[in-house]
Length: 163
Image 1 (cartoon, rainbow, N blue to C red):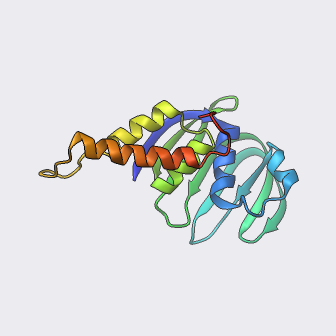
Image 2: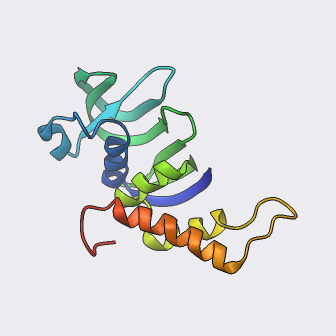
């Protein structure tokens, strides 16, 4: 798990939610509409959209699509429970993302541009540091581990050269 504490645009966090939960079955019109968000309740993951104005559109599988305006906050818990993130509006469509993310969620956060390349590099540097006392890794091992994760992150992007 990696602690996340950064800022991002609402649209980027919306893309992260979609990539993480319903990319394979979201209707194209909903995907293109910046006011449509996935919501989910249940024991296996949840998404809650806190908004001044919210209307339910349609339920597909375990996802309810809502049209939401004036978003104040979003709470996301992954199906596994390993990722728990909150997006809180700070000014307009800019907000603060905080919480814990799994490696899988890091890939989605990076590809949705919630996390910048620089911030991702910082997270990877922290994650590749030995956490237990007495555990030693060489700088070569750390470099290989970081390069492996970065390659996976870059491979998740569909846009060439736009990292």
